[in-house]
Length: 72
Image (cartoon, rainbow, N blue to C red):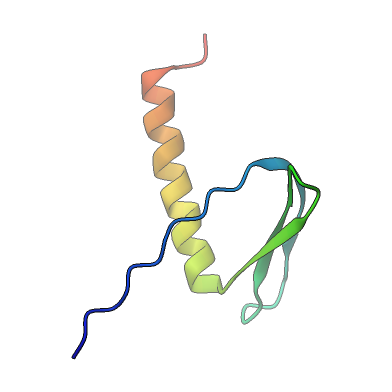
């Protein structure tokens, strides 16, 4: 079996976070909508499991950042 081709990373300059849409349906998706510096919008749609994983990663990152530069 052939090795999967590694996809290139994509760097986008986010100009603004327009909205975060959270659904109340436990089976529902979460969407985060960004506006790029070019004016184009990008929507990231997460399943509940993946959004929970993102939230956990962000919480860890916030905790690490707070230890490096605590609020004074």
